[in-house]
Image 1 (cartoon, rainbow, N blue to C red):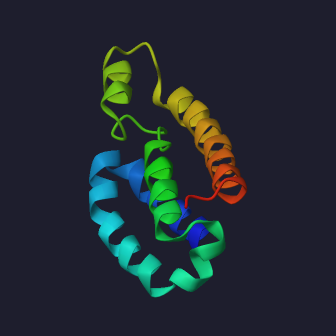
Image 2: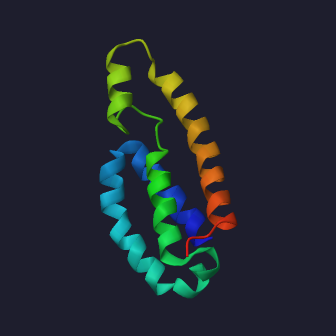
Amino acid sequence: MIIIVAGLMIYAISTFISNTSAANLLMPMLALLGVAVESSLTPYGGVASLLVYMALSASLAMTLPISTPPNAIASSTGLVPTRHMLFVGSIIGVVGAILAFTWIVMFPLK
């Protein structure tokens, strides 16, 4: 549950600010949280799995032009409306988060 909630939190924040900024802001706090509840994270690979999932969740937030520089470039051309970016980015984020979580559960880091 901690991994899923933290992933959703960093995904939501990363949607509205730069992915790099969101990761730099939340990763230290999530690392401390992971150390505090390490016993419950052990079956999933411990703190390392939590941090890898957080990095993936931050990278998957591609719904708005502010999230990543490629999105900003695509939006600035005027050829890609923000509503299309929002639709496709949401699909990529949901599918990517599910795949990343499945990977972490099936193949925990050691």
